[in-house]
Length: 297
Length: 244
Image (cartoon, rainbow over all chains, first blue to last red; front, side, top):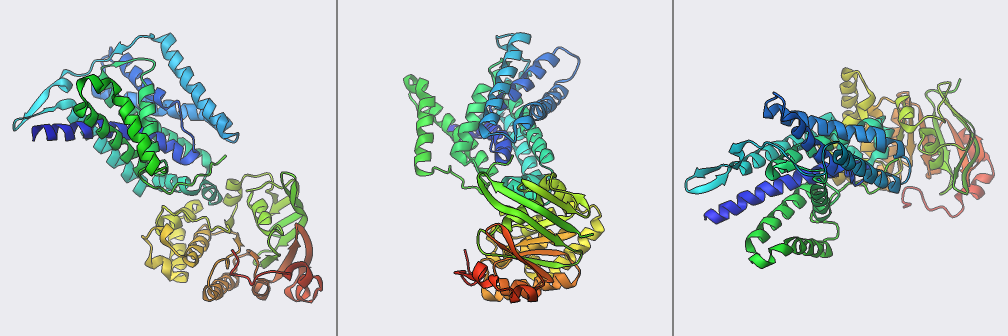
C-alpha cells in the first residue's frame, strides 16, 4: 500500500514537471509551428538567476519569482531579437535561429560563469520527509505537485477565460483568419513566448531544486523531455502536452521501480522503445488535437 | 469618390497571372457582385483587397487612401471584413468565443454588445448554441457564424466569398435573404458568387471575370443582355451551391 502511494506521488511529481516542460514548448509550437530549441536555455537562465541572487539579502521566495520573471523576459527578448526578423523566411531559418540562440546562451554561461555545475541553495526542508500515517512523503514531492497543479490550473483558466487565452487558441487554429479580424500577429506571438518563458522558469525552478545545481547544459535534458512528451502526447493540443508529460514521468518512475538493478542503465532506451511503440500505433500522438498545421509568416 | 477602387490590379502566383489588370469600384451602400467560373480570379480579387496576396501591379484605394501596400491586419483595421471561402471559423473555440474575436476591433463595449444582440436576432441558431464548440456546427451554421463574426467588427465593407457554397437549397435561399437584408440595412457588400442568377438578382452592379480578366461589367440587366456571358461563363458550370 505504502509502495503504491509512493509510486503515485513520485509519478505525479515527475509527470507534472515534465508536463510543464512540454506545455512551455507547445505554447510556441502551437502558434508558430516552431520547435524552439532555445527553450532549454530559458531553464538555464532561470537557474543562473537563482545562483547569482542567492548571495544577496533577498529571501528565497523573492529570488524564485525573479528567476521566473527573468526566464519570461529572456524568452520575449529572444523572440524580439532573433525570431521576429526571420519569421517571414523559411521554417528552416527559424529552426536554425533557435539552435543559434541556444548555443549562444549556453556558451555565454560557459564563458561568463563557469563550465562546471554551480550549486544552488535548496532549502533543507525540501529534502525532509513527512510521516503521514506511516507513509513517508518527501516535502519536495509535495512542493512540486502543488506548484505544478497551481500553474497548470492557472494556465488552463487563462487559456479558457481570458481574452488573451482565446486569442492564443484561435491563433493555433487559424492564424491567418485571426489577422483578417484585425489581431496583430506580433502581440500574439510575443505573448506566447512570454508564457513559454514563464513556464520554463517555473518548471526550471522545480527541476533545479531536485538536482541542486545549475550548469550551462542543464536545459538539454528538459528540452529533450519536452520534445518527446509533445510528440508522444500529440503536438496539436495543450492536453496532448500534459498527457505526454505524465506518460513519460510515470513510465520513468515505473521503470526505475521494475527494472532489475543491472538493467537500470538501459532505462532511457526502454522509454524510447515505448515511445516508438506508441507512435507506431498512434502516429498523431495519444491526443488528437485541432491545431492547424499551416505556419504563418 | 468610391469607397473601394481597384485600378489595373494584377496578381501573380509564381509564373501564373491569376488576375490581369482589373478595374473595379464599390460605392458606399452598394451591393456589387463579382461573378465568374472556377479559377476566374474572384477569390484572388478578394485576397488582393484584403491584403492576403499582394497586387503585382496597380493600386487599390479604400476611402481614398491606398491600401495595396498594407498588410492584412492593417486593412482589416480600416474596416474591410472578409468572410473567406473556407469560412475561417476557429473550431476549437466556442461560438461565443468566435464572435468575441469578431468584435476585437470595436473599442466601444456598449456598441459591441448591441451589435451582438442584433447578430443573435438575425442568426438565432448561434444564440441557441452559444457555448457549443464551433467545430461541431454544420456547414450552413458555420457560414452563418462566419458572417456574424464579420458583422461584429462593424465593417465599412463586407466581402463575402461564395457564401452559398456547399449549402442545401433551402439554406442557399436563406443565405441570399440575409445578404439582401444586410444590403437594405445599408451594409456595403462585395459578393463573390458562382450562383450568377441569384447574385445578379440582388446586386446593384456586377463584374464578370473570365480567366483573370474582366469580360463584362455594369448593371445586372446590362450583363444579362450581354452576349458573351453564357459562352464565357456558363459553359459547363455545375448548378451553383452544390459545387465542391
